[in-house]
Image (cartoon, rainbow, N blue to C red; front, side):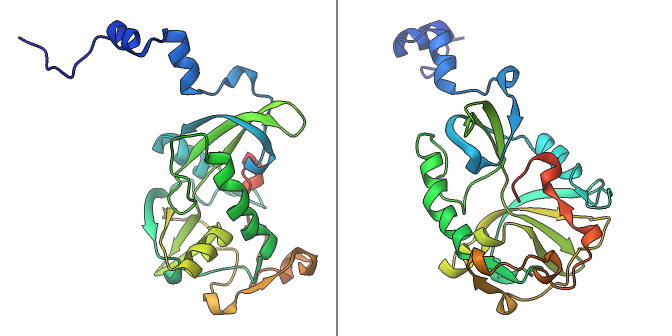
Length: 231
């Protein structure tokens, strides 16, 4: 049976590209897991060398291992999905957003992504593993996760990603988010509308965490830093 004209043998493909398999592998920019020393926030990578998308299986593994401050795992039996949401329909648990945070998103994230052929806007960006050199010159990796939204009865509440959601709300656009259903532990804050959010400078940030959230139950707070995720 004759092969379709668009089917190419691997050797012929590399010949047409004038690349060896080793050259091609290098251009894929795959992470070198054996060389990674630390897990850091994405903003701590001074040089990004590779980006790899996360499978749903690995994403679920990460989400399920997020724990509360008192050691419980609220998402152990949860189901997750990735979908576009309208931030206007979401509830918030924190009282403040910080100008420096959302300015940093606008200024730094596009620069990090510009050398890779993936969505450059934070509104469309999925779940990825980044690796490269950190600020101390060590090879490290960092996770980027879309905003995490918990469903509690009829409310969809922002657990992580308040600044990205705020920016998209102000622009009137939707955002790709991780929706977490079947949560075993109640949300750690009161669930409020956007109208109760105040935008302040970092210098005005209350030192007491209880003053930064509505009706905070600190023991139930989701500790993303447990996995090195910058929440």
